[in-house]
Image (cartoon, rainbow, N blue to C red; front, side, top):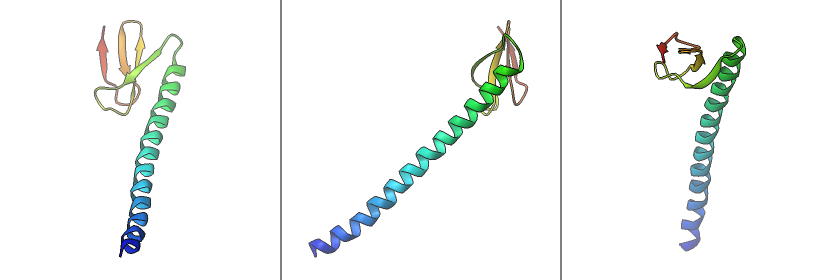
Length: 80
């Protein structure tokens, strides 16, 4: 009996580990996509600086140009 329960736990642990790895890969893919957008947005204009994720859409990159913050995706704008 003890051998049976250990045999059943091992596959469950593997499944749990796979799910954890899938979540980590998903987070890393999202982070990589955001970083790519940040680099693209930063390269569009000289003097522009990527600040962080857009508070409006959460997908775009908030870019600072002089006294303005603008989203590279949704067009959200706020002035400093």
